[in-house]
Length: 331
Ligand code: IPM
Ligand code: MN
Image (tube, rainbow, N blue to C red):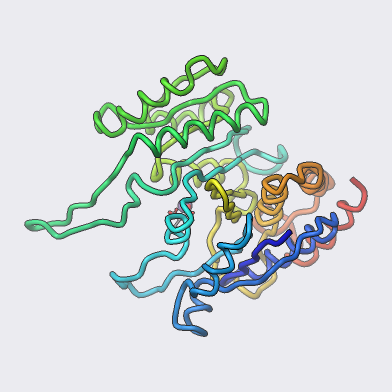
C-alpha cells in the first residue's frame, strides 16, 4: 500500500518526520512517497501545488500533510493549495476530534468530534465587486448537506457516540442554514442517535460552559473552522488537534495548526497533532489496531509527564519524539 507524505513548510517537515517514525515503528507496511506543496514548492517549482503532487495523490488512498505557509503579501490571485486539494479531490468532510488529553493540559474537559463541511459554504472563493463593496457567494447544497450528515452518522456509529448536534445560524440565514438543519433531522431520524441542534453562537459558548453536552458536532464550513480552533485552544492548543479531510476515495490527514514560521527550524513544535493525524490515517487504511496503539502511546507519554514547550514542558520536538517512541515500544 502507498501513501503520500507532504512535509510542507515551517514546522511541517519536523513534525511530519516524527509522525513518519511513529508509522514505521508500528510496522504499518506502507510505502511512503514524498511530495511537495506550499511556499517552498513555489520557490522550487513556481507552483504552490505542483501538478506532480496532484498526480501522485490520484494514485493513493491517503496522504499526510505537515503544514504550509501562505504568501505574506496580499495577492488577490493566490488560492490556498489546501482549499484547492479539498475541491479537486472532493474531500467533503473534515473530521476534527478534539479532546483534552490530560487534566494538566488545557482548560475544559471537552471530548468532541467536529464534522465540518469542507467544500462549499463560505469557501466558494467567489467574490465580486458590486457598488461600493464586495459580494461573497455562500453556497449550501442539499447534496453536500446529505453526504456530510451521513458521514457524521457513520462516525457516531463506528465510535459508539450517542449524540449528534447540528450547528447552524438558521435564525438569520433562514433558507441556506434552514435547509442544512432540515436535512440534518431528515437523515438522523430513525438512526437511534440523540439528535439536536444549536445556533453557532450558542455552540461557541457551550464548548466552554457545557462541554459535557457536546459529543459529535456537524456543521458548515466556516463555523467548523472557527469552532475547531476554539475547541483546540480549550483543550491545550492546536499542537494536540489532528484532522482528516475525507472524500469517497482519498483521505488527506493534517494537524489543525499552521506552519508557525516564527518557530520553524527551532525544534520547538509539538508533534502530537501530526502523530494523531497519522493514527487517523492508519484507521482510514483499515489498520485500526495500529492506530489505537499510536493513540494509546500519546496518552501514555502525556500521562508520564513528557511535554513540549507549548504544553508547559521543556522538551524539544526531537526529545519528545524519542520519549514517545520509547513509550510506543511498551504499549
Ligand atoms: C483550516 C485552515 C484553512 C481553512 C485555511 C488555511 C484556508 O484554517 O484547515 O482550518 O480555513 O480551512
Ligand atoms: Mn482553520
